[in-house]
Image 1: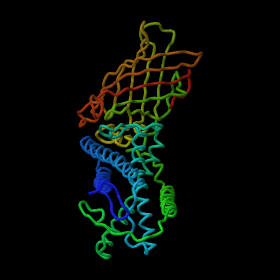
Image 2: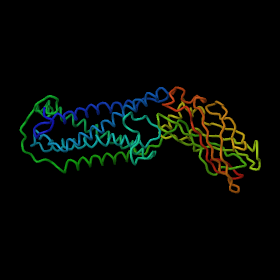
Image 3: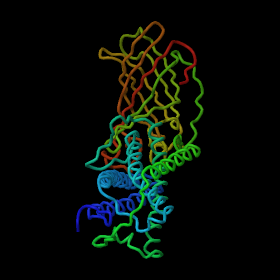
Image 4: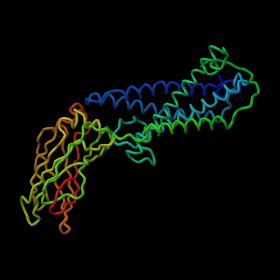
Length: 405
């Protein structure tokens, strides 16, 4: 069988691309639906969901390159003429559907890849593909927009695919012609083409109008900016009287998930601080920090992090760190106890301290082992979810007043 097309038949290269693409579509769409519908209430369920999403993404990116190669081949090959060129409406519709299919085969996986690259916390794309894309930063708003576009383009692809299959069935069952046979492997179908006037501009223009309408519908339905829900409402923290009032600050955590660094911070926490900067050695003060766990934002895994196998925010909505503030020749140290998920464990947090009149700047960091607090006990592989969680503190405080962050 010849490799190239003629105006009467398809070559084996075009046929191979066609059926590889069909196989990819019929694999990647069900994978995405199944993975999206799976629960993730437990660590085991989350691991299974992540594995299926990784498979879905890897097949999708592979399909992107197959489709791109197919398009490059198609634009330099003659396209077999329609067998019924006198049916101008039907021929125009077929050309529009082909444009929608070609475009969707690029836009669907590309938007999914952008969503992946812009997301903190994800099921990784497997080798040999990378996790990032040039000019695509990790950004929650961008990832949500790309995710919405991915859904919209997928719907266009599905509708186009249904129309394409319906057309092939019509030709085979009703018209009983060789339109479908020309794309079947091993079939030698040669039909002298009947002269016809090919639509050059109208089909891509109308296909573009369909995409524009679909994108607009997605905007009306609000699919591009979906804020991430949390498992429980953050508890209201009462203001505290403190010798030092926090005026600005960040309490953050960082964890490694499936090879990716995922960082987040708590929006609501209070700190009751006493500190005597004239003390040169020993105990110089104390700190009592209360944290609203559901106020955590942790990339795309925020909702999962609130679940019963992780922070269990519905049952344990607050955490607490109480410590003495120690001064030594080597620096400052908050030596105390962190209570999380009802579990108490000693924690030491070294920090730097700088004064500017009545204002103090505190910067510190430490690591805790999530297993100590029975977080993600089902995730026993450090490569899936890192055991070490980095905790960082960066705050500015002034003497006196209420201290609610």
